[in-house]
Image 1 (cartoon, helix red, strand yellow):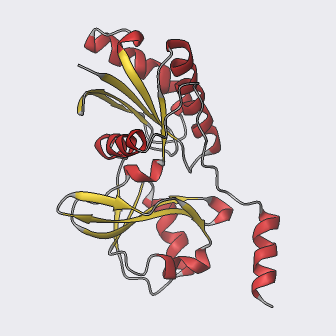
Image 2 (image 1 turned 180 degrees about the vertical axis):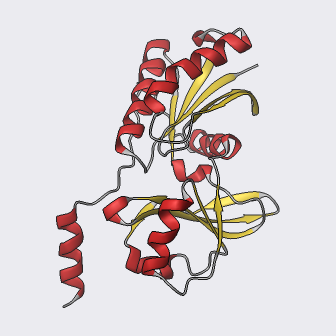
Length: 228
């Protein structure tokens, strides 16, 4: 049996999960908020103890690579890199947005707040339970969001209280179904399998984080260019 560890700390809804092949055998969601750093390692240890495993029993490490919180991403990535490097395990980085999938078929967009940058977004479609995402997540300015999510029937996010008012202020006539939820370990595992099949696996403990965020100066420069 192959055991794998999933670490996802890109948002206020951090979690870890341990898989036996494709089945979740342990899952620990952290308390809501930006506190993944204090819960991550104890959660991993709890999982190992509960399942009577040792770190050497893992066959690979999966880590959400963002986009999302800078501090949360770094904490998760550092822990994943240390484990993968010290145990000589393959490390798979995945788009964290691929963890947010709706409970029904149709077009949807997974959204994470990017603060002054706008919104991190990765859209997809679910057909008979099978999810297909756009190739890459992107940073979208609020004024461009309505066009970006035009086909999406559902908007899914980890934090509705922050993101919904922000988006509705920029797009007051937006009519979409909103869902607030935690990331799906199963969806993230499926995303990792896609990375493995594509050969995007590090055997040196490396992971490319998807920061994506532009500086305020870059944003203002783009606005000026758009006027000409």
